[in-house]
Length: 154
Image (cartoon, rainbow, N blue to C red; front, top):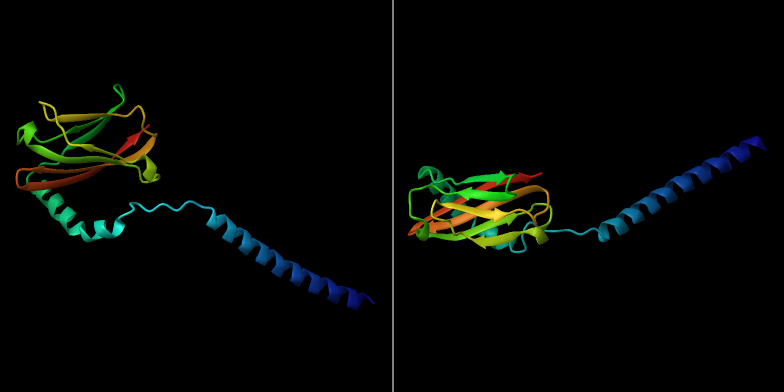
């Protein structure tokens, strides 16, 4: 009688193990279906095709030594971009994008508008704390530039 009782306990343990595995897999499927999946950008395919242009712009930025400085000023709670003093401020055209890798809804795009000393400041009071990528795409006449730098807001 002891041997038969032992066999039925093994069978029950095997069924419990398989049943637990099925419940675990179903729970993971339900959890994954409610998880919000964000792409880096909604038009990633078009941006992938334009990636060579970004490489060319970056190369020209390095060759012309036109890499802008990007600094978070904690005393003013601002992000300041300092452009090279090679061209007058009114010749700059382009976009300055504050890109939040963890949440695309927080991204901000502004026009490039340097002041008379070739600085452009963006208030950081409304920005979430953490890592931001500052992506600057600008033109000066026929020259096309691109720079991407990271800033951490404490």
